Length: 575
Image 1 (cartoon, rainbow, N blue to C red):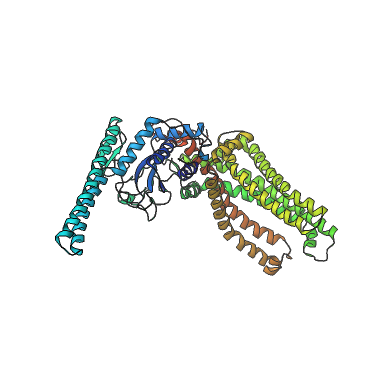
Image 2 (image 1 turned 135 degrees about the vertical axis):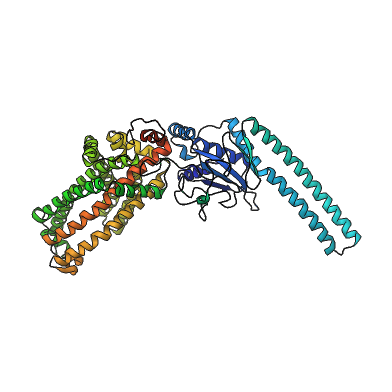
């Protein structure tokens, strides 16, 4: 078992979907080691088969284990081995469990189906030898030679048959002694299943249904873990035969099912929160957006003077005028950014509480959301300011060498070094911001301090950086595209009604009068009503999803929601 194979497997397992591993020249021993590691982190061995190529490759199917015991074991191991994603820091091999996995894989590869294939092979050899004798001339000597070849091949097949049967009997005895039960699937293939396990079509709660056939090229509909579509009915994926039919539907007391989520389910959960609790969500978003936009419009119209910034568009402006214009623009933008940041912090704090309650199917009013979020609002503001300062510091450090070279030498090398420094600093900043991207929901829901929330985010993102980055990037793109569809027409309408026309707006020479500020502000309010719930909702659901994967939070949420009959008063996620 190589470090790279383990890394790849754990990375695929982070999706919460079935995992198919194919390795050229793979040995059963390597597959068993990988399956053992998978079992320690919430997955279960499902099947193995020959790869079908000429290189002797083997393919293994691993599926999520929805049992509470497996989820608790996965949470415990993630807590004990937080760096398991490196492929090295994994739980040590347990010999007995490893030998049972080897026996299961060996039996699946060379069980009754292998004996049946040998029988078909013997029949094929017989027919081939007869045809060979006729094609060689059909004389008695030709038939004698064909008979000798036939006997030799049958002798080899017979030896192989006996060896295979003996090995299978040894594997079967070991599995039966451990409590595994033999069962035949719909094709007649015998499989050994753990105690209590059953195949689809045999009263198994994991069994497939007509709705459970896999989609082409996959194990069912996107995000189908526990949803209609499952991972496919028997034979539903690439000829696995009587395969795994998917887990039972997970409890869904609110906007998401209580299990590891797919990308689509996270996005759908954010939209469902906005749709189901639209009065609270849109009420909060509208109130915050209107409040901040009124302040911004008043500041831009009464206090912030844009007259001095015209020097930036004047090619004949002096260096002193350009410096003054740049300073004024920076101050104006900074004031607007600060007001918008305060609004974003308030919306994020309130919508985090709303989304966390929506997971449990519990409505919450704006007043209740404010009372719950109020003690953490200042901490959240401090967290966001700290993250912005970190980004600014990284960019300054990245630009510093290039700026020094430019100031001293003044050649193109300094400019190139500055550009490279900015690019390198940007990569580092993005990497850090993704690692800290779950700090906001951790701070609000776990009632932690800033430092603890940042460390919690790092722990939850570890090993899933690309997944967290991709989901948040996708959510940001979707939210901004939808908002732009609304904001851009309002901006053009504002430019048209403002007196200077669209041409002046596009050239940057138009006057930002009251008409322009008010009309464009209305567009910004409507856009914010969409972006606030989506971005905040995705962050909260991604945080909950990572805790489900790492800490089995779904069990706690199910008890809190009363779906396991506990009836206990539930805490919001993170409590």
